[in-house]
Length: 73
Picture: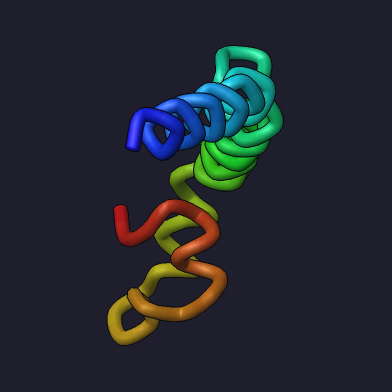
């Protein structure tokens, strides 16, 4: 049964060698998460206080426009 352990070990090594390109600091997934986080910050910063008060008036706190401005003031 040593061949079974060796085979599992080889498959494990082969599977983990692709992970840094996907999950590492410069990986595709890390870049996608970073881009999404930047987009969220830009959306929240887009509205000034006066606009946020207008869009998030009483009864409109859950509207799409209010949520894009970052929520109620």
